[in-house]
Image 1 (cartoon, rainbow, N blue to C red):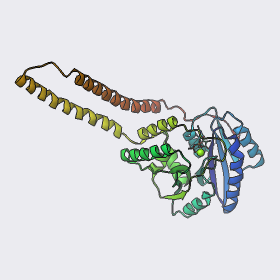
Image 2 (image 1 turned 135 degrees about the horizontal axis):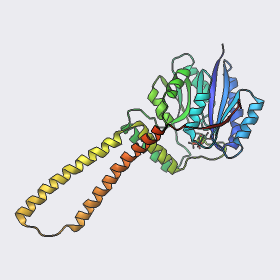
Image 3 (image 1 turned 180 degrees about the vertical axis):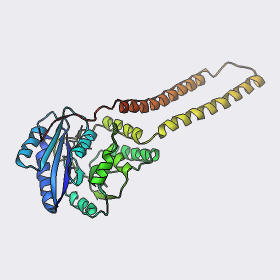
Image 4 (image 1 turned 45 degrees about the vertical axis):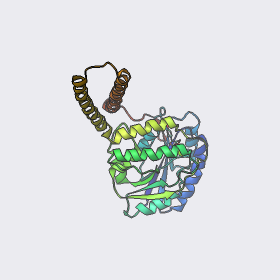
Length: 311
Ligand code: UDP
Ligand code: MG
């Protein structure tokens, strides 16, 4: 029996990119004739005619399937839905804007087809064309998250990968609400083959990530894969208690020996502000984790489907 690769493609307002992507992926599919393909588009509540474009493709080509959300739930939700709906023996996830060059699929398939590897992940080796500030922060970010978390996050790794059914099932066995795909993939382990490529610009449309959105996403990833910030908060607390204790002793001795000249009001305000700030910071860190636990405990669905190709 011929095996099947499911290509999961999250799309959010990508009306211009869908057709270009389809042409490209069909070309690549022809290059791997030993497997069947299904192209599973996940419409993440687009407000343009992305869904209509996908439906048109489905009428023309039965390999095209789709799931459409009731609203925008985010890329992570779209990837999850795609993995749950995919029926293939292998599942690939890739962006619709061709920033994940589909022709890498051939190499990916070669890597995992005879069980030498279980998952092939694309890794961008250059960040050419990206604003330098963004690359700079990305570098710092990866440094920090790798220090804080046991799960290794590689710089440049994309949400573009081809996995065996076994890996897909392992990832799906984690029902968490706060999903960070790169972390989940790294967490499940298995034999990973990194496939390197150069940065490619978007074919159409524009990115959905603002700096602020990326920042929030980054914080969430840290919360999801590390509890070290909680420890840091506690360590800071202990450290400042110690400093305060030493200072109290010093001040008492000084007063006893030299009397009590009133002074040092400004320095006192500084200390008060510093302590206040640190307390708020620690509270904020605890609050982040509490918020995550709160959201998890509600067991809300990660996405809601409005229509699929079977409706
Ligand atoms: N995407 C999505 N939901 C969102 C945002 C993005 O499904 O809320 C999809 C988008 O259509 C694209 C992929 O995720 O296929 C990557 O998005 P984008 O190109 O904006 O991210 P970048 O490549 O700049 O990191
Ligand atoms: Mg992109």
